[in-house]
Length: 115
Image 1 (cartoon, rainbow, N blue to C red):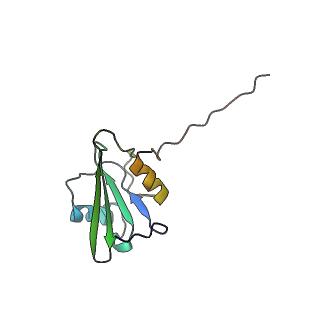
Image 2: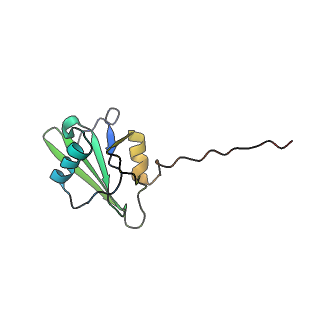
Image 3: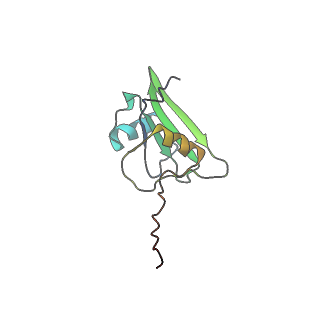
């Protein structure tokens, strides 16, 4: 496995993905649903409905590779909207794997000065 982490692009597929899909099914989602090129060396990340399984699909030199991570007790933070693809940084990718919610912003607090 040789991934240039400084230059790789990471795309997530928001919403739930059927994790019965394997190489061909996920590659079809990348090209047809997400509108991306599976052979460009990017990482494509999918999550199941329960948010307990992540799958990462990518092309390496001469074949497709899949990583799977399954959580036993917790859930991955994952956007529920159904937009076709969203690019995230590799830093956010590692945060996502650690369970840090990168999709929720802190709300702005307005403080009024008492006179």
